[in-house]
Amino acid sequence: MKKNSIHRLLKTLLDNLTRNDDSNLFQFIFRHDETVNPELKEVANYKLLCLPGVQDVLITQAL
Image (cartoon, rainbow, N blue to C red; front, top):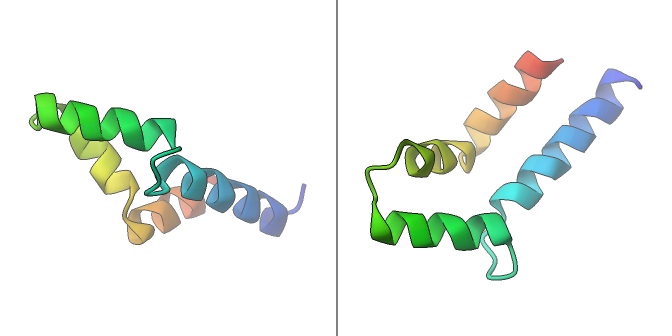
């Protein structure tokens, strides 16, 4: 696979994982966990993962 193809694949994956949509299971779990225990490291990590700049750095480091 070329880097451009991998970049698009990773971007699509991260977009789907962090999509702010009720049908997104990850978003549903995040909202629940944030309500129950907002101090969880998983909550903080997911919030960071939702940031486009963080996603860009992760993609760049993966390539």
